[in-house]
Length: 563
Ligand code: BG6
Image (cartoon, rainbow, N blue to C red; front, side, top):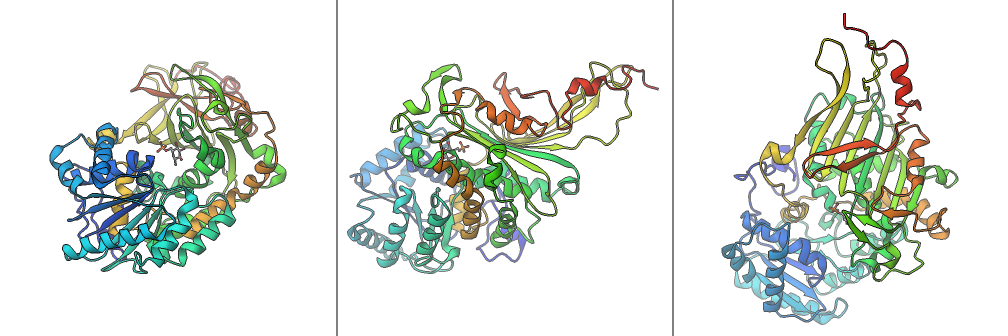
């Protein structure tokens, strides 16, 4: 969340700083607002949106007179919607524990309209209900529309919001309209540009909130705080000190019941075009002028524009795709992707991707970025690992058992949000022996508070009119532009190694290890030995010099006593 008040010249309405304690400084939006969800009978509404809104209600952060209008084709009335949403909150792992007093108040504001997304009648009915409620409470027509439908409906819904008079071109001030649009935004560069063009017919860019829930995660927001609010970090955050950066988003889940969607998307569109490239942009961006929508987004867009286009000729060296077969995940036998519901039995959709990317600018030239994401991996982990260069000269005379490892900074986004720094330390005793040790910051321990869910943060930001954590049209198109050559080539060719090419419960196809090993490096794989003591190990004992660790250790004198 943003401290636009503290930043001074923000154009968005004011909001106070982030919730670091339970008696947080956050204030509720002071403007009335109706929240309309298109696709209200779907999974996202039940699992994410309503629990997030309910949590905001529990924290007293919804505006006075807040109402939700669900809009979907599944027949339901207001009562049925309330019942289904009450159930969703009780079952949700993300919702604050059920509080009948808050729920009763919240439920009164839930309404439902059964209508087809394409027929004008539903929009007229919605307009009438909104207008009646706004007039009855003498409230402005502030309306936040959320598109949680299949992406193929986005352009049509927006067109009808305009033609029915439900939306106007006012981003802020009385009678504002704003529109949150779920990912995926387009399925390639031309379709994303076409979607931007048609949405701009109805909404100004300032009214459009393209959501990427990763940007609402606490430790993703913290990357900027860590980089730009600490004077010791920024000087080493560049090609002079950083050897390479790894970004991993691994999931133990398969595609579950989303086979239909996933068959069209695949891992490249589902995770890379948005989440992973956004993480990379935040890690690489230059300091913005202020913490505010356009400044932050300008700097992130610069990174995406500086990325070296994927060269089709070197594709085999920098990109690997995979698909999971049957295997064992979390001690359970699981089926392969091709056996999942709504998946073609000979599908070549990728469920794993590893890429080596480069950012061609002053700060990052020649620093490789290794990105990977996959389903049915051994652990649920999202993290950014920054490996620093080795010291230029080591004058300690190390023994056989000494371990000299480069410094690693790990920004963990899930699980156990936090930051860890690995550095070398002297082993206690009379001799000078070295061993890597770790310094940990963990959100839960440091702040003693459960971080807000990403959707809570982002929905509140949209109500307040703060777009800092949302994607702008040019960013979305730049991200598609980075991946476009790969999308085209993979669509037109069969995988090099027939699918499935990795067993569920493994870290992806061997080719992904080979991709990084070619540069003399290895993935930092997260493994959970117990729920509370995660450890990491490299997949191969080869470091960036290309020398085996043992060889380096054995070089020179060993085991000499400290002077
Ligand atoms: C979504 C993808 O955007 O992110 C899913 O569509 C994926 O396929 C999910 O499972 C991962 O999000 P998180 O927050 O669990 O890392």
